[in-house]
Length: 126
Length: 107
Image 1 (cartoon, rainbow over the protein chains, first blue to last red):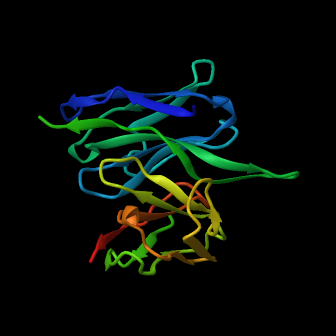
Image 2 (cartoon, helix red, strand yellow; image 1 turned 90 degrees about the vertical axis):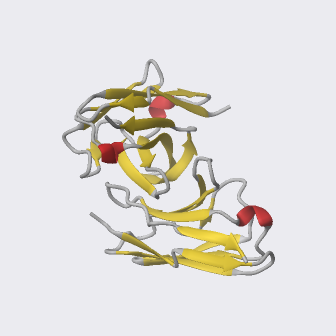
Image 3 (spheres, rainbow over the protein chains, first blue to last red; image 1 turned 90 degrees about the horizontal axis):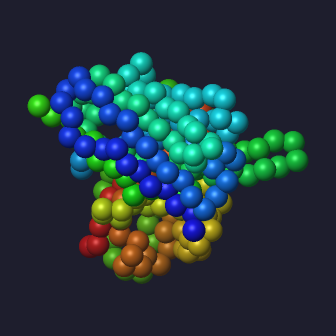
């Protein structure tokens, strides 16, 4: 069964750091682009960060750039999000997600996020 | 960054109705537009990718259309399990921005 399981969330004071983990199982992890998406309480979805399909490029939302850092360990089939200088507005449920891709003869196309974990909650408060 | 604007932000309908949700991108995303359904307390579920392709296991009453900057999600013959929040998202370029969501409620 294809599965993503997030962990590492918790209550942290403003300015603190947390490292989220996402453990993948049931698929060839290194074949997939992986992303983090968050959802503040009662709010919509916000893409936070992700790797491209080759795993050699990463990007961040402006709201977290310079504070959050994404990484992956293909041998451990895991995705990580190091979150530094946390702010109250970072309070959210953080999801790990796998991106759908379609392999064509000349190019691979990347589409939506087809597999999601259950999320891990981060609360930033004093 | 590409901005995604959904309308309406909420919608009331009855079982058996047909509803349409629209999504507009601030610049062309070609066909790199996805639709998600989110039920309360659950992770989002991919319904439609590449504007009009039904994800595996999604009922055929869900239909996506559009290209460039204007897209629609149509749900025909609404079922009780369809009352949820729907999001569009562009995957043309990072950051992969989402629309603000459309909450579909039972009338």
